[in-house]
Image (tube, rainbow, N blue to C red; front, side):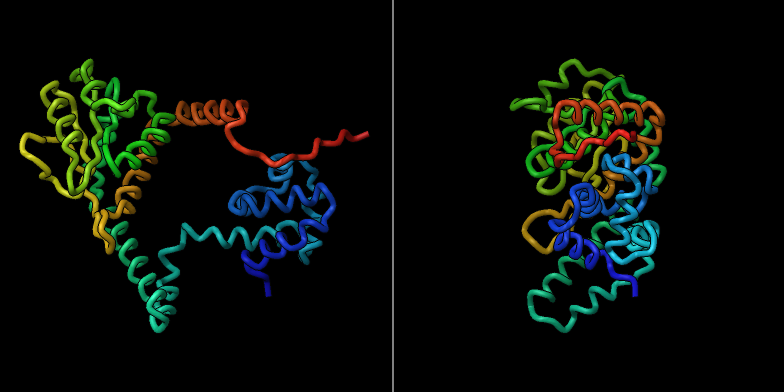
Length: 299
């Protein structure tokens, strides 16, 4: 029987210290990047690691496989995102008769799945298309949120600016978002995120944006959050939770879909910007990387 992904990675961790140097580098890459290893062909994987393809073949043999493809297969099968909906919820049912901690885990997990499913079901394609249209056609699209929702706005801006350079996170510093909206016009857009209890700062920013005839997109758990707030598009999300604070799982799922639309709308230009960002980060040492053995020149 083919070993599971967990069994393979555990074996790699146990045996890595006994492997030759180049094989150690390959084994570490497999443990650290199981998804990429499962998807990429042998030459691309070898180039990324900085070793020859033969090292990967020998690693596969050491792990008990006849070929590299056979070694990679369990990692490919583990990429079940595209078929997760067909796997059922047996993993939840298996915990039904367990102790109170297991039962609590089932409740929390089920709630989060319900929150995500409901939020995505509420994400009407027509509303989403209007929201994306406002964002990409705007000269500048300001993204704002405060308190706990700020984490959502920060991530959306961090990733989204590579698809749409006009995205600006406000407030930029410790002031009010309105400080950064003073020069905004009807050519601009405001993307606001707030859930109950609604942020007074975000509501003021939306009113300020409306006075300037800016287009407004709101992501919230309600279409009516305060008087005088009239967004052009409301993207509703579920925030139901079993703890004292709102669940952001559904909001994050909707934001991920919006990011997907932004990158599709920007096409090759967005992909080029991502490469430029990544190159700049790698060149400046933004990401930690393990020591990689230099490639040996062939005689």
